[in-house]
Image (cartoon, rainbow, N blue to C red):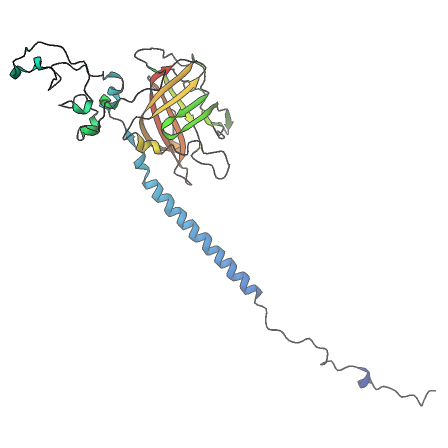
Length: 316
């Protein structure tokens, strides 16, 4: 027995429990920060949604601005108004003394050979109707008939329109007024739940199969994207809405090319329609209609730009 060895009491062998207890910490506010973030995000999403709805309603309220149609008088002038043949009865003055009775000259004499500008003629029977109130801006083109690009001839001089299904499909489309030139691709048709749909064109203009080819009677329909921020399918028709304002002042031409040549369609009207109401109408004339989703970021309507065949340029 080791009676002389010191022994530890139970209280001495056990450390004081209060010496090693963790220090108390203030309550954590992590959950509070998460709650605030969730509420803030929800508020932001709600405000964004409300803002989008307001934008969409404003955009739809302005769809009426897309509606415009060139007057019949002006359209007739594109192809029927000849350049004025100026003679003694058309000219108020003459540089030939023989034409002036007060000068003692003979009233018989030569016909004036140099044509007057349209703005000089009065009354303004040769002036574009849009300039009747300001004839000084009419220039020298009667009825505002824009010059055709080189090599084009009016169809009344070259009757080449054919029935649908005769000419080849389009391969190019150009609108000089908005600096657009692009390729054309025939879109495929597929069935979805018993409903025929067309594939979406990517970075080009798509021709709807079954509609007329360039130069044929009937309507040719061409689709393109105004923009495609989600699918990234291009924005070939980004400037198409600009035509609505352009045709109020000057003619706008759509030139569609194929192996048969190039066909110039002059824009006659613009408009819109809800996507669910779009029908590919046909006509006995020769027309094209360009289509794009509208308005931006809403896309529940379609902007329509329609032109009538006016001129032709053979290949080469």
